[in-house]
Image 1 (spheres, helix red, strand yellow):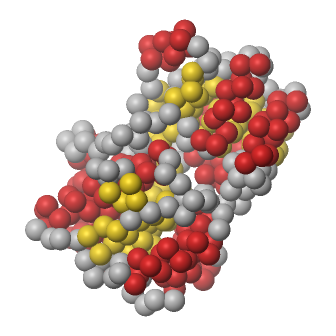
Image 2: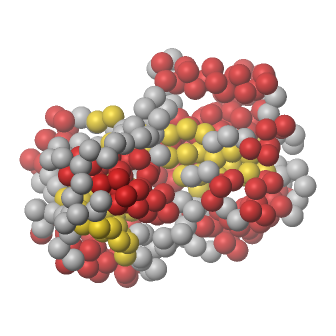
Amino acid sequence: MRRVIAVSALAASALLLAGCAQAPAPTTTADATAPDYCARMVTNSGGLEDRSFNQSSWEGLQEAATTYNINTDAIVSTSETDLAPNVSQAVATGCDFVLTVGYELADATLAEATANPEVHFAIVDEVVDAPNVKPIVFDTAQASFLAGYLAAGVSKTGIVATFGGGNQPPVTLFMDGFVDGVAMYNDKHKAAVKVLGWNKELQDGRFTGDFEDVNKGKALAQSFIDQGADIILPVAGQVGQGAAAAAIETPGVTIIWVDNDGFVTLPEQFRSVVLTSVLKNTSAAVVETIGSDLDGSFDNTAFVGTLKNGGVEIADFHDQAGLVTTELSDEVDQIRAAIIAGIIDVNGPSSPQ
């Protein structure tokens, strides 16, 4: 289950009573400005330009700076030892709002939030239970379910694969949905598409052990390609670029990116191997959260991004649209509608509550 870090039993009870708020809409309006307000972001060890959730969170903070006329900046962590000091540094700036990104920052976020109750915090991809911390989480399994179904329908070899940077709930949630989407395709089409790299039942699979070493990603992806996989879903930040590098060296192999649209954010040479991406609308969530802080409505109720509220989705097929038949695209649309309607229940041990 997703780890929840509690500041007190009282705070935990309050959060449970509040429930989960809807994820923010993709657009915001500039109905508030506060030139004296400042916000600071602390990245995890993946760095600012990780083509993943650090980058998307920073884009959201930059958008908030323009929308609300506020001062923003990012403090970049390059190793695990940077994490706690960087959160302390962000608080020491005297800013009104601190955004932390990733599970690695959960303990430091809780510690600083407890010591500084007047500062408002938000954390991406993790739940920290404190009165002044708003979790921003996404039910990525819903979107990766669509990606898994799509991958099974596109695969020519009948073998697809996925791997992660680490065995952590925000990572394995993608992998759970992907595996379940492949399983539904197999059931519907009496097929036998195989998934390498993840066993949902055992919650065990293949991981590189970090989110920075591109060479590890390339080596692991190549091992899947050697076993016949022609579509790979890396859930590993920058490491996933290694999978793209392996794919461009093997005709017929494509990848599915995560967090943002890899066709846009990856180097141009990799566009030809991006089938689609599993998207998290992190930027809009960050803008909306800061907007709520500015207008006095900030609370610790979690934002949960879903297909229904636009918090998660899959990207356009771009240059790979020719691989997706009209029939398959229509099936994906039908499945999306069924998930939104609650007809198909996508869940797993890491699903946000």
